[in-house]
Image 1 (cartoon, helix red, strand yellow):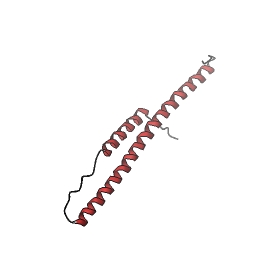
Image 2 (cartoon, rainbow, N blue to C red):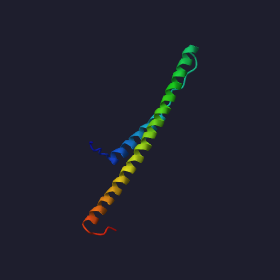
Image 3 (cartoon, rainbow, N blue to C red):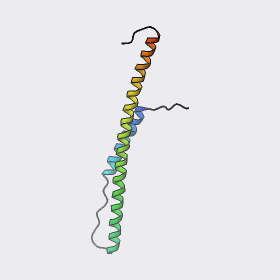
Image 4 (cartoon, helix red, strand yellow):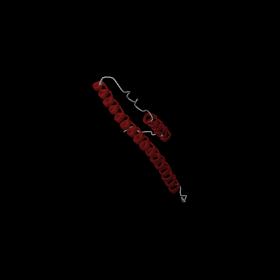
Length: 101
């Protein structure tokens, strides 16, 4: 089975990028409708704007969730690596007859 190499700093960079893009996307507003014009066309444009706003909100939420998950996973990998390194050092010390503290 191949090894999986994880770069926690890369995950943190991904989290930061996703959060920045989510903030950028959330700041985009649909243009206001101007009065006049053919009524059914205005209603169609208004419906399209509502659809675009709904998709934007879903994408923003998804990007923020990805940022949160990537950040949490990076912390978990760092914690696991630190703990594993301490366990390995402890085993090495026990094998050589040195008492680990």
